[in-house]
Image (cartoon, rainbow, N blue to C red):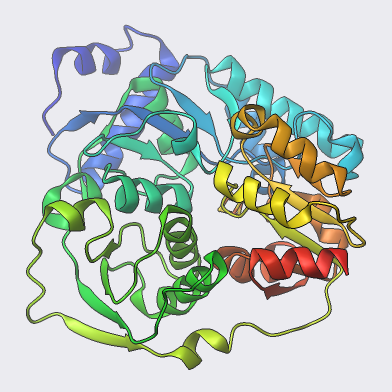
Length: 387
Ligand code: F3S
């Protein structure tokens, strides 16, 4: 692997032990995957942030490190909102450990935005190299924006944040970004909601696996793309997809699709996922809400009062920039929380069944929260929460 003089200095320990260890980790990873060099990154997004997922050993490892991020880097959602955690019913012992995790990351120079939608907060451009961890963020960056990132583990994303580089392999290389199968959607999707695209992703992720699909027959908007990619990354391991004429590279590159396997999706594949089971709580914002989604929720809740717990999750920066809308949502009794989400917060484990508008949450809630999940549109979610 080609290393520049600065890398050699770091490997010789001239910038401290943590930088040395972090670069050793990146070089080892690069060697495993056949990377020829390291590539500078524009930003990092670091998973392994919820105490629910990393536990004591993860926290001990983080506190043993000593260094500073050299590129903008944010955290994945943690197990609770950094403020207002008491009102979410978080156990104080858990809160203390979660605060220790956050403090450890802050000491390492990671910005305390805990979100899977960093693209709403920091400019991310076509062709940028990134080291992002969370699967929906990775999918959005690669597919919708046309940036380049592999699906990093927490330690490799943290290492990239501290060094400012990542090994150049996988989706950093153009040759690995070509479509590998075609998905024909034989349904009129012109009136589809975000939930419908989440359901499409839930269905297709199961057979796409980790390949790069090229969709035909759909025209999703950015929020719908976000839902499609998040769900495909949950039931499969899709880190990049293309939609004809819509996604970043599909607009610029004429891909040769000849000879690729073609799979057709029919109405029944999607409609069977919309089962009407009774629910105890409703959660919207997986991935974290965009400003447009917050505005839609506020509009639907206007003049209504929630009768079942309704959680809305978004990045703190997005909530701060849309304070009036967030306040209007909370007037109904719904809660708008930052930093955490339906899957990583232990507070959601108290419910036996949760309604979501997300294909990703539909896939994860049963295993991660221990309850049943039901998918519906945002309008259905608001109706169930207020009727
Ligand atoms: Fe984001 Fe949590 Fe969903 S990290 S994609 S809101 S499971």
